[in-house]
Each structure stands twice: as C-alpha cells, then as structure tokens.
Length: 322
Image (cartoon, rainbow, N blue to C red; front, side, top):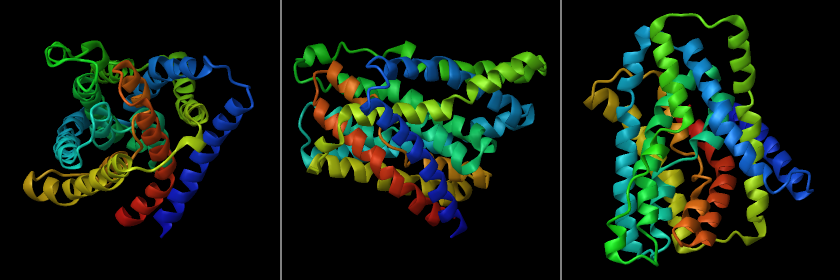
C-alpha cells in the first residue's frame, strides 16, 4: 500500500506539471512554435546531459557488464509485443493507414517525455541506469522497425513503392543515445569531470523533467480533449499498451529471466522495466502518421487517451509489483 500511495503522489506531481503546460498553451502564453522548440531542447541538449551525468553518478566500470546483459529482457518483451500486435491486426482487420500506428502503440513506449520523468519520480536517480537499458531497446525498436511499419502502411503507396522504403539510420542514433555512449566511454577512462562542467551538465540535465511534462501538456492542448473517443482499434491498442506489454514484462522479470535465463535481476531494474513497459504511446505517432498519409485522427486519439489513462494505470501497476 505504501508503494501505491507513493506512486499516486508521484503521478499527481506529473499531472500538475502537465496541466501547467496545457493551461499555458490554452491561454496563449506559449506560441505555436514553442512545442517544437522545447522538444528539440529536451532531446538534443537536456536529455543527453542528464543521461551523461546519470551514468557518471550511478554506474561503475564493474557494473557495465550487468547493465548490458539486462538488454535481453526488454528486447524479448518488445519482440513478443510485435508478434501479438501483428496477429491482432489480422484478427481485428485493422484498416490500412492505422496498422502501423496500432502496432507501434502496443510495442513502443513514450520513454523520453513520460518514461524518464516518471522513473525519476518513482525511483529516483538510482534507477536511471536501468531506464537507459529500456530506452536503448525502445529507441532502436521505434526508429529501426516501428517507423518503417508506419511508412509501409501508407494508403497511397503501391506495393513496389513500399519495398523501397528504407530504415532511417540517423534516427536510430539520436542525441540521447549518443550521450549514453559518450558517457560510457568517459566512464571507462576513469577521468573526473571538472567541477564547472559537472555543475553545468547537472543544471541542464535537470531541465528534462519539467520541460518534458510541459511539452506533453502542450500536445494535449493542441490535440483537443473534446475530440477523444473509443472505437475497436483504439480499445485494443490501449489494451495492448497497458495490459499486454506490462504482463509480458512482469513474466519476463519475475519468471523467465531468473528461472530460464538465470539472470540476476535487481529489484529496481525489474520495477523500472515493468513501469516503462506501461508508459503511454509515442508522442510523435500523429506526425509519423501524417507523413505516411495515414489516419492522423486515430494516431492523435491513441496518444491523447494513453497519456490520460497512464495516470490510472501506473498506481495500479505499482500496487501489483509492490
């Protein structure tokens, strides 16, 4: 019960900051370009700085092997989610233009704008290294395969054109991931950062949580809450995101990892993986759907609903996993 109450308080903090972004956008305090600008600031500068400092403060060279060994569990979880999502697309007869978004909703999570602040609120900076493991798998999954599926779901493309869609390798190595690799290399050198750089990175990295949540508030304000609705494709996509993905991860953490793979899974690592598996759908889905001439209204609806529902899901999940 203590975990449940603690998670509720953490989620309330997140909701209040999101609400601030929503109100400021609705009141016209934030210009149309602000959301895009703050998104760049987070992903290109603040998050890499935050990740760099988290690695320096929470990892040692001896812990790196165990960290990378942990990549296997979220990888298996994402693969299972993809398989089930593909099956559901066929069974439910999800129409062209929605299929890529449907699969991505189930398989890939909003780790940057919701996952990172949520993890910090629930578990503190000590769990950041475990968050990075899930972030790596989620990022590669999204930009190496998830976006490819959305592009191939373009209703205007003929079959021959779909075969020429290629993976955007630049997207697979975004700045936060670059920041992680640079941090690992720096850690291996054993060199201490000068105090002024340490403080600078720390201050800039601390921008991630408030700016990310304000950005989500802006997204919700732009989408418009009155337009949200439930239909068959939306309901099953949300069930996949909030029930299937966490259940699979719970089984992997509690049973498959220790019993089958004989992995020594730290309690904080397991909880981080489970919570990250239940974060909302990717905030960029409407943009990606629009670029592929897909169903933008469906993508927006899924993102908005999943962002609102996670407020309920996370405390319940914390109660289950303790």
